[in-house]
Amino acid sequence: MTHIGRRGLLAGAAGLLAAGAAAGPARAAWEPAAQRRGGAAGGAAAEFRGMWIASVENVDWPSKTGLSADRQRAELLALLDTAVERRLNAVVLQVRPTADALWPSPLEPWSQWLTGTQGRDPGWDPLGTAVAAAHERGLELHAWFNPYRVANHTDPDRLAAGHPARRNPEWVLPYGGKLYYNPGLPQVRRFVQDAMADAVARYPVDGVHWDDYFYPYPVQGEDFDDEAAFEEYGGSFDSRADWRRNNTDTLVREMSERLRRIRPATRFGVSPFAVWRNDDVDPLGSRTRAGVGTYDDLYADTRKWVKEGWVDYIVPQAYWQLGHPSADYAEIVPWWARTVAGTGVSLYVGEALYRCDAESATEAWRDPAELSRHVSFAKDCPEVRGHVYFSAKQVVADPNGAMARVVADHYPTRVPPR
Image (spheres, helix red, strand yellow):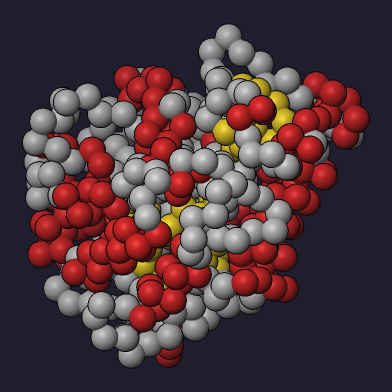
C-alpha cells in the first residue's frame, strides 16, 4: 500500500513530503484547561494524549457529506468515546478547514464537509456539541483552525454566495490548484483572526490549534503571486522571504495576544512540519536533510514562536520512523526538546499512526511496535509531555495494532490532560 503524508491527505502536497523522505463515561474528576500554561494542579507534569479529527475532505468526520444531523452527531460522539476507550484525554477537532465553519459563524459559511453544500445549515451546532460532549467525558477539546486555505480548487464562483473571498477577491490568490487568502494583507490577517476569535468567544474550548499551513507548500514551477502586497507593505524588509516570515510572525503573535484577552484559560498550540531548518543551512537546525523546512519554505519561524512564548504548546509532526535516513525521529524529538527547554512551552509529539499498516512499503511501519518505541524513546526527553495521533479513523480502526500496543505499553490508566 502506498502511503502519503498528512499534507497529502489534507491538501495534496504529498510530492514534497516524498522528496523529504527520499533525501459516555462518567465525568472525570478534573476540570479541563484549568490553567493556560504549565502542568496539572500542584505543578505535576501530567501527560497529554490526543488525537486529531480532520473534517476536510471528510478524512475522519463526518464519514461523508450529506448525513443527517443525528448521524453526524452519533459519529462524532463515537469518536469521543473511542478516545476515552484508548485512554486518551484530548481531541483536536478541525472546525475551520477551508475558510468555513463548523459552528454558526456570522463571518463565514457553514462548511461543505457537513452537508455537501457550502453555506447550508446542517441543523445542529457541531462545535458546541463537541465541546460539551468532550467535557462530559473528561476530554479536552482543542478547536483546530486553518488560517489561510480558502478552497481545494481555484474557482471563486464555487464558493457560497456572500463568501468573504467572493466579496473581497483582492484578498485571494490561486496557487497549486487551490485558493488561499494572501497572508501579506493586514486586512486578511485581521479577518482570519476575527473568524477564529468568534468561536473562542462563543465556546469554552480548551485550545486553539493551528496545523502546518501558513504560506502554502511550494509547488514546482509556480510562484505565489504576492508581488503587489510586497510592494505596498514590504518596503522595510531586505527580502520578500523576511517579509513573509514577519507576516506569519505577526499573525501568531497577534492571535496569541487576542486569546489571552478573550479567554485566558484557552491554550494556543501549533502542529508544524517537524523540521525547522536542516543543520547544513543553519547550525541551529536539526541533523536532518528533509526536503522542506518551515523557516525557508513555509515562512513559518516555528522556533522563534517557542522562544518568544507566543504559543503555549507545540506539536511537531514527527512523521518518520526511528532510523529514517534523512529525518530520523531520534534526531527530531531531541532537537525540539532542546528548543522548548526553559521556555515554559509544552512539547507534544505528533505521531504518524496513519502510516502504521501491515501493507506498508516501509518495514518499520509494518511493525506494530514502532509507535510504542517512539513513546518509549520520547520518555528519555523530559521536555516531551505527551503525544498526538493522526488521525481519528486510525485510532478507531488500528490496522496493524500499533495503537493498541501504545495503550497497552504506555497508557495503563486514564490521566488528566497536562
